[in-house]
Every structure is written in structure tokens, then in C-alpha cells.
Image (cartoon, rainbow, N blue to C red; front, top):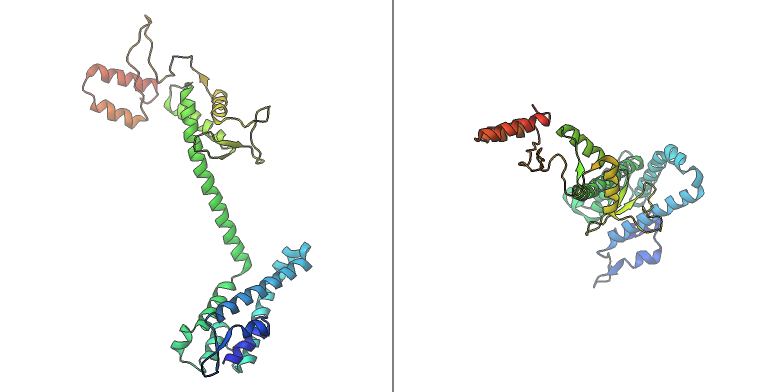
Length: 302
């Protein structure tokens, strides 16, 4: 059995006699036996052999790699596996030509061991993993890999934009933009503002001064070659979408000025019709209820 496996390592997996001999040790009785790392080294040698084949194929057919893959990959995979199985039959004297893959390995090892021992034998487990995991169609693997990479990039960008928009909203509120009185119109205008921020990419900064990147990946800079500060960037964008209230005044959500120059109570703003009804129904003061109703009317909710 040891000699057969040594021959398998040399003839099938491409190992040298010296490499194989380093994986064999002698018992106290002078009998050769395999070291515990024999299967690991055999698997490593097989991977190197496959990588070498792929590299040779890539170097010799560099310009036509895609066409070769589409036309010949499946055929080459089948031929390689068939040759692998043929070599195993020759090495171990297997006569059943119908047995393939895992069944072939099981049949060979079952000549010396029980079926239970076969399935738990390290050699069997290693070959089982090889046949079931490594012979995945390349096209399927590349498709799954591409989908995963796209999903990962999308998730990372969504996470980045979440923090960017949150900080941008803080800056926007500081400069007091004038929003439409109609809550729906105000919401739509703010959404357009945040949507415009998605035209850029960003490198997050813990202090909030995020690096702004143009679509081509270069940094957004001033005319002097310095990075544009995130706060100034947001201020300029806000002015593109909103009118800015005078210093000391609020937009339509601030204090209302009376005719004689004084001020009345701040107008109530409602998130939506349900918010209005909830607050209106809970208010017992009749005058405040009237003010709430007028505020809801001005916001287009009733």
C-alpha cells in the first residue's frame, strides 16, 4: 500500500522521488509507513500541478484566453479527470471501468478496508474533498464571485452614504435653508439634495471632514490643490438647492412674526396627516387645537 501511494505521488501528482521519500518514515521494525502529513503534502503538490497547468495555458494562449475557456474548459476538465482516474486504475489494479470519481476511490480502498474505514480514512476524505470541491465549473464560480463582490461593494457604499448624508443634514440645518411650507414638497426637495450627494464617492473621516472623490476616483480639490472641506462642500450644495434665510431668522419651521413686529408661538409642524391627528386629538386647549388646524392647513395636510 505504501509503495503504491508513493508511486501515485510521483506519477500522478508530479512529486519527485526525494519529496516522496521525505514523507515516509520507518517503524522500529524497519517497515516503511507514511508520515501524518502525507495527504496534506499530496494535496499541496496536486494544487501546484494544477496551477502550473493553468499558468502554462495562460502564457501560451494569452490573447485568446476567453475563447479557449468557453470552448475548451469543460472538455479539458473532463479529460484531466479521466486521466486521473485511469492512472489510479493502473496503479492499484482496478478492473471496473464503470466506477468513477469517489466510487472508484472507494472501490480501490475497500479491497483492503471495510466501507466504514474507507469513509473515515484521511486519504479518502482528502480525495473526496478534491473531487467534490475543486471540480466546480469555472464559469459558475466566477459568477458567484462576481455577484458577491458587487454585493459587498454596494453594501459598503450604502454604509458610507448613510454617514455622509447624516453629517450633511447637520451642516445643512446649521445654515438654515428655507423649505417649502408643504411638507411633501419640502421632503422631495431634501431628497433631491441628498440624491445629488451620491454623484460622488467618499472616504469617511471620524471627525466628519470626509474626503470627497470625483467619479474618476480623484480627490475633489480647490483651485490651490487642497482638498475641499466637507462642510464647505455641503454648504455650496445647499445653496444650489435652497434659498438661505437671513441671519437670525428661521425658515417656515421657525418663529412666526406678528404684524406689529412681535412674535407669536412657533407654528407646529407635523410629519404627516397621522401625526397631525394624533397631536390634535390629544390637545384639550381649544385655542391650541385651532392653531394646530391652521398649521395643518398651511402644510397641505387638511
